[in-house]
Image (cartoon, rainbow, N blue to C red; front, top):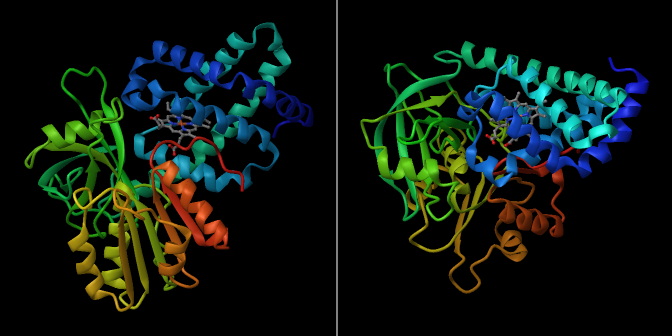
Length: 393
Ligand code: HEM
């Protein structure tokens, strides 16, 4: 445990570090990658070049440090990050490397202001925070490997089918290259795809939600081509343009805690924007297969008919579910945005609400739901891109 004095030093210096947060993490990553270029095989280079991951790690360390005497309160947020780490292959031995360079960067940026007392307090705090992550992740690795047909790290999968779902989204059906059956996953989980792109020095990793109901034979991911958003689109463009049926890609075992509560039979309202529809395809498929009497409302926003994916598949699933609402709005059309009135009219009473889409979409939807008086506990959300701060709620 940390001494009261150390905790006091941490708490009094969090604001100072937060002010210099961006500089510290910039220096941290520069030094980290120059000493350990092999870590560029794990980190998302697009997030790096945009500074997004930098903010995420810095904010999280500061938020955790601020709550250092009650870290258990942060466990749900730690678990969400730990799922991502496990899915990417972050291991115990990486933590001291990150710690060393984070401490080094604090020293470099703060200069003389970083007294030995401050540095020692932060070293201890990082050790405590890292040990929480390490133990949560260790359990996840063991669990993933112990699942029937589970595996640790990355495994070869064969693309058995490639299907165009809309003008921007293409699905890839994946089977284990060794022909083995697949471990069960929870509807809503994602996998990490790892690819070696010709001409690129390091492997690239991206997370994609599994978009078909859990089954033993195949996984399906449905990828939006982000061609106009370089460098984000490096992997999606590669998958769309170069990966064909018969090719092999590597993936890690399903991860993530944005999942359908399959124990419950309460009504569910899904609200998605664009490619945020993908985890809901898996959840809807699960309900159609296993919980046909569970009421579902499926609300979706996309640009137009060309960008709309899964229309027929949703209708197919809905035929198996007794009580359904299904509405898609096209934002290119007049009155095509999801408004509070639209939600009020179409969401199910007392339902759990699942939201997924890009950050601006989620910000607007959570505002709408707050305006409608929906309780926070009823709202489950997932956005695409790295978490920018650690929620302490
Ligand atoms: C992602 C925090 C240690 C590698 C993240 C995210 C946070 C975070 C907040 C974003 C999660 C999301 O996208 O949902 C931390 C904290 C650490 C730590 C507080 C130390 C206590 C490490 C270590 C490694 C690592 C030791 C490996 C060397 C990554 C990678 C990502 C990530 C590769 C994915 C995002 C990207 O590629 O840009 N981490 N992390 N992290 N972390 Fe960590």
